[in-house]
View (cartoon, rainbow, N blue to C red):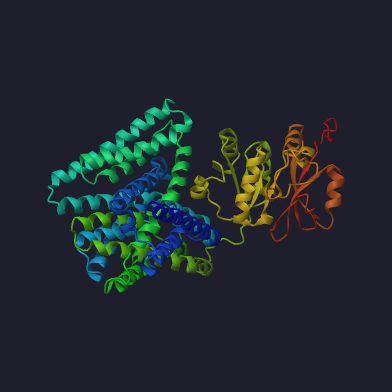
Length: 601
């Protein structure tokens, strides 16, 4: 039995990985493939029976996994960002979310025949989108920047807030079902909030004073989250989810502590938990569904898609500055994700155990809503965006990894040439100076899970790895060649002859084409800029071609970029020499005009 259980768990881990990998390859939310894998293993083939396999451990495992998922999601909510996210987002995550909750509840009550309490819980779960489903869809959709920012911020903010709505409604249902008074319900909310706040305060105190070594910080926070969840549940039944949600929100808004590494760890752990959890939960579905349930689920999905979402977006975005085309696309895109699936299954387990009528309908209705929104919107959102003329054209922008003087100078030249440029780096001083130069920035490693959530790649189609860290440049190139294509990533070398030696060389599959000419390295370009060399942008013509440019600025000028008359960016590299033509805008590194300055270097 032990071997069978171990083999099954290992197999689920591999199937979860394959589902995540397939989602990455086709740029669709992973939740879709995880749910389909669970349905195939459970209801369709009968190979996986979670209740039989885990027995009494099923509920504790699901509970702890959901607690960590909710904590990780709530950890990303930053109160100081709320005033700056725009009127449309504030509307969508406040009265828009409440409107969605109520309209879905009405539909669930009258179409699926759910009691009002279960219908309200369905509405709370159905109003949550989330960054894990929005981010991959935006990469395929490629809308304009206002739409992308609105959808991205809505997913980030509504993730913990929607979970909080669902938890509060769930607490009310359980209190009523078990005969609790209003006082006990209020006490449950208060104790959950207090435990969460105290746990956050304790973690922040220890982290701020460096009382926990860095290599143990992730372990400490993980243990604190699970302990807060368990203590809260022990003191007042079913208050643990509220405790971890409050803990995440509180810890994420404490100043003076560094939680990026903790967030990265939680994101990686959540990926594993989500993969296992969704396969388990989907495998518990009973097929065929109860009579009328499939029809009710499809009807609720259609209502959510063509009535509820457009209506709430129209009301939430009044006075936001979004035009009707942008509002129409936002009103079409709202895929449901992790919170809806995981929390609905956990609540259904508990509500069914205490005999709440209709609890068994919660999971199939939510899963139909998830699958319907993800599949339909993934297939139709891009054509709709093109028809509405709110899609980004061919991605022409440039992501630059690095923020030192070399990266800033090149980024500014490309920005002035009309390209969207984003400088990404985890060196704060360079990012600060880039912002002072008016450049768009991302503070963090562009290859990190944090960047998957927050780095806006709208309109970006190329990577220039310009950091001083050779290995991290290569890692970024490997990461983004899947995003942009192998021919759209470049690196500025950090070594010259040493790079070609067996001791110093990286494997060929880790290397992207080197930028500019054979002799150009990061150190050399930095030295040239320090000696007065400058980046010059000039429009060529029939009377002033590239030969005239070289004659005027010197034969030692280094051609960096060329912009064709149709706006296409050409990048000079060792493997692709440029031949500028009349009508091109050329961007070149030219020597100082002062003849006393060294030009050979």
